[in-house]
Amino acid sequence: MKKGNAERGAVAVSVLALLAAAAVDQALAKDLGDMARKASGALSVFPTVVEYLFYVIGALLVLAGFYKLKRNTDNPQQQSGMGVVMTIAAGVLMVVFPAAVDMIAGTLDLATGGTVARPKMQ
Image (cartoon, rainbow, N blue to C red):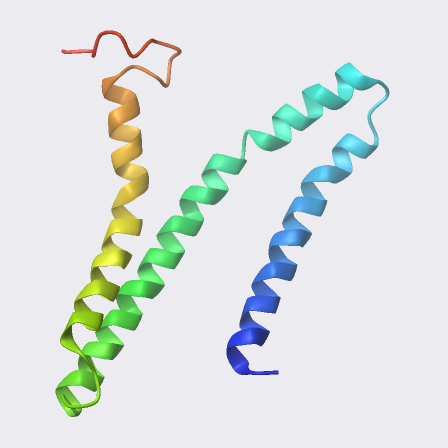
């Protein structure tokens, strides 16, 4: 098994373990309503987990981009400059994306149950 495949397998196993830990509470429910309440409680943390994943993956992409930049400056014939720029840009976009979604949701008042019909201007 290659090193990259082993790392992907480790990430997949850790994600499955996280989902299994969240599902244990639903297995102990007394009835369907109790299961729904417990499931909604477990799912309320999901956006936070996704936000942290965006931050971590974005930071890793930025670091990988800087590593590619170093390799490009050492040996410019082997690496393309556009790959360096795209990797760093993708990492920065992944880091900025959760904050941009929060700003848009705050502007449209979606966090408090508002509608999209009229933006909130204060």
